[in-house]
Image (tube, rainbow, N blue to C red; front, side, top):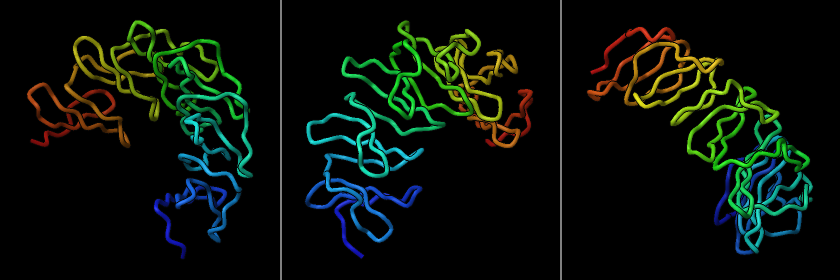
Length: 212
């Protein structure tokens, strides 16, 4: 087995990012480079594309043959999720692109997160957060101080009173607020009340168990 300075795990279709004295690149399962180019940094393949940073500091995506997918340069590229990817342009605007490199919508945001189950969180120019769909349209028009992705129909959200959970319509599923909340896991969520105590609640917001 060849020794690399850095070696990340393999992703489908069996390619891994590595670094040696020549730079960063991708190898196959036989540890052979899949292209001749070398980069400042490369990341794993997702949806058949990998984010790379070239020696000039430009970020973009390459395909499984090492070919550049689109001509645009970005300050940051994320990993593709659900055929969509977060990018930050050279003016520090965030938005999403498709696997061909085209923008999914015309709006620019202060920040955007990955798509999950068809929706993503975005930060607006006023500092508030909302959910958008895969066309870039607001999911429900509700804005929050902070926001998480949807998981099994619920998302974490924060308003002026604290953290809680919302449904796909953006409505709170219970009245109580917490210092922190985690996503629901098989019907239950770990929360921290304002006294710092850990508790378990169900999807109706009912207290199930006190952990402290």
